[in-house]
Length: 279
Image (cartoon, rainbow, N blue to C red):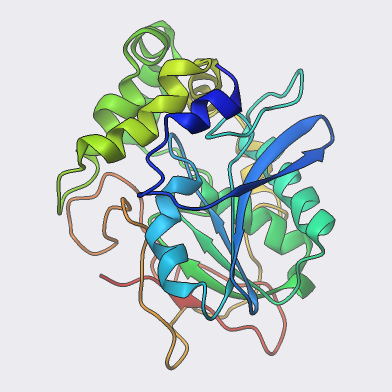
């Protein structure tokens, strides 16, 4: 189904935003660009899209220019031919996206795979970033036993069947990761729509990038994680908010890894400030 026909199925009461389109290196990127002020760049993970940040946009667009792109193959973004869906490739797309919009003084808000994807871009261009808002994410290679087992299952034939044939990521993993409230049918339809009516190959391919070997050399490199000693914290008077469906960083039940203040290092400049989400 085309992006325009898929958009007709979306409940605009939940997502009352017009997505702009940007052709970039063969990709056709859809993104929300709402409000005025310093840019707040919001990066989603897998298998979500910019819909994740709908309430954040509504609450902050009076103070920030809220920018939420759909990563290639997710939401309403169409990937270029031959795109491999690895985090390193997504990071390069985001880097080019930032350059194309000439974003500066960026506050970066990340969740899930949005973390390593966004942090890598921030490390390569620290002069464009001023702050981080950090949800459940990470910025280092993950090789713990749980991750290895999950990666083998989801990246193998069984995972391919569950994702391609049963829409497992959206139908089971997404609602199962939200501990504090049940997602409504309208919200689930918004997430499931692009997987039911567009190719499911994209999220499946992205899940294979979770394997214990895929992109580990990139994650280990100096380009994949921030590099100064500043611990993330809230600046005075800044909003303490998190994505609508993001598992709380402190609820004790989340299946997503959480970055502790001592674990993340921000890009090196003396004026850099960082913020960490709080439930």
